[in-house]
Length: 413
Ligand code: NIG
Ligand code: FE
Image (cartoon, rainbow, N blue to C red):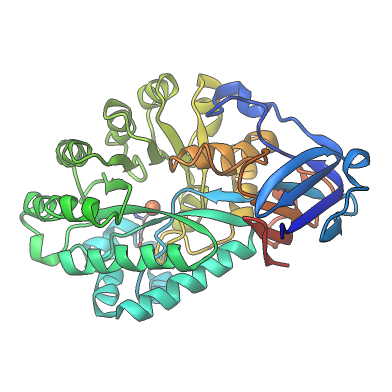
């Protein structure tokens, strides 16, 4: 027997499907808002989308009166460091004393502190922790999530993290897309030979492909981490092995990671907080998506947020994300990031909704599956305790979710 659910009396419905494909430049600012609509879900998929008066009388297993609330696609989170051991709350005091993020890393803290904890953790511990964070992400309206490795930087621990992500993706209702970030920092063992670390990580590419452990390869291109030349070589190798690539680019120092992402045809360039005029110009002309992470800039205490306005006005496609991780952005709350995008990057609410749905889905190669409410698609849908789409970035810091459906299943209420 088919299981049918009707959501009716929707005040504002965002289906996010008025534009074809990736939404770029000024198109991000135009949003089709359907009023007094209904959505019919059948066997976990969207069966119909129509005005309430056309659907409200049909026979279904469950009818949900949305009471004029906002309904949108489930949110897509395209950049997280989901699987890690330990936590770094003790570094907060260092931050308060003004010790910069890269200095903490240089002293063996930061990412390297999480590497030690992740190496020590068992697969079961990492799995339980990842599931906990996935549940919390779901509670904020996220239905598809990307997860990076990068806290092992040795063969064994990187594979352990990737296997944990794979198992979490198989067992948790959320859809998970995995990224190999073996090139995330330079460990003590490789202090004077970063190229050897990159070779070691690249030697995992075949096995990662064979075991289907990741779709993307990512690198941290930054002062004191990997140079542009090292990143180019490493990511080119990843592409030769059939991976799509991403770059942590121009986060703290403007090394030109944005241009490198474009040059390599990367799916995304992430952070881009200090991208130069040239970087922005090239990004705008390319198919590389800028994934902006204002939570990280806020959390690192930096004044310079990514120039989202310049990027969008130049014609770039932008997504936003929490960058959830234990050091530079410790939150699963994508709604808070939507507020920061509005307040700190001056993105409009219309742009922000594109950035957390369809564009975020394209940022992890799921543009044909997630980020839209469309007949035939998985029913990933959120009912919000909000009267309209402007309300979510406006009322900040709290959770506005009323109900989350993942493939038609009620996950959170
Ligand atoms: O995206 N910048 C590098 N990686 C993460 C931070 C990871 C960490 O501090 O544990 C980021 O900000
Ligand atoms: Fe990151």
